[in-house]
Image 1 (cartoon, rainbow, N blue to C red):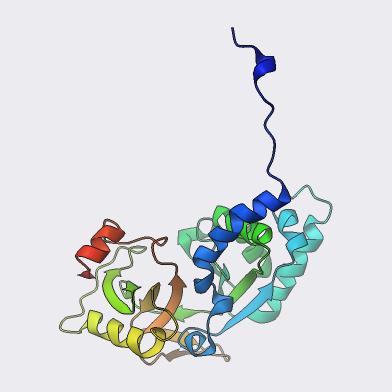
Image 2: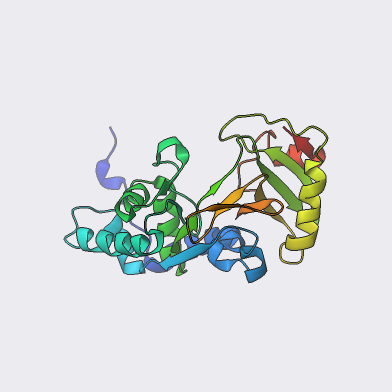
Length: 256
């Protein structure tokens, strides 16, 4: 029989140990968070308002039995409403979106309470907020202008050591669009070399072709050139139609 008295009692990590665990994780993806984008890079994407999340509120958001839960949730819902007005916006954190809790993986809404419900039910957001808290880093709710675009027009691009090495159709809607003789890879390479290479030697970025972005009056205007959807850390982001990063680096090219 096992002597239960010989089994040491487990102990939780200290705050200092949690910080040492989470800080490297945070640093691995910190270059891609929206709040870290240089102004020139942010201008390539949609207008975005950042709402800072107080570290003391993070646990409350994920604990509805906390007596402060409704107060905290209402505070951020009101801050989101102040940005959206009566226009739908894309809701995410400065790190990732709550697409694991939103219908069809598209967290687009004009309602702050709906947005906070998605965030509070998202494991992706919970993981990122906990990581930020223990790493001692700021994290934000990013309220982003909506855009419209043809299905099959979003592509994930992989740059390493200053060169665009691969590009894949983004597989969320699983639609294959016909671009004819349009040089997708060439346009993505020009985009990277012109706008991103000076800031990011190695990065993953998503481009949307044929996008129209909602302006302050609620009307959609055609965006000139590819629209930068988001940045992602290299090696940690989904490789889409590639089997993995080994294939990205050995074969590269375009996958549609």
